[in-house]
Image (tube, rainbow, N blue to C red; front, side):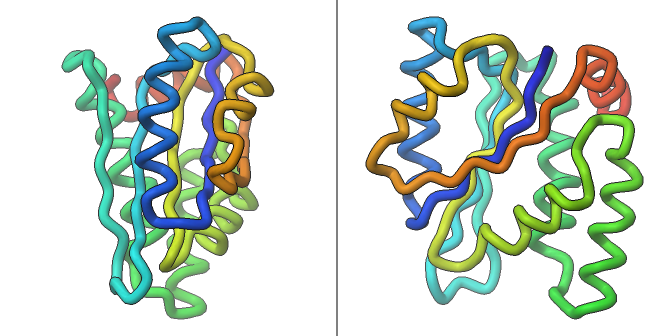
Length: 161
């Protein structure tokens, strides 16, 4: 079963450090990384910067579409009450079959703000508790939405992965 998780860090460099940690954890079998994206938002910047890593070019396009849609809707649409709410609502409807809920999206948008960073992760198997231990000292907060195998297939089909 795949798991969609977002780790929020209290510093703009935290998610990048965590991305390095997940590579190590994956090599030890603590987590199987399908793909991930890093959102870094330095204090004073109008928008965050994003980057992702997927060593499998066959998967990169589909997951890149997910990250583009998700991160774009969360952080690059103007934050104006009704417009932001409509964007989150539309995104949650588009992702409703994937197990990513409107409440998760709202929480991500509320918590990943200037001066913080986020690690968006699609993973399979592993030990999330032991993985979290690896993040000790990085001031990480976990926002998680588990996805079933069917939901994962739907997500991959939706984005052409």
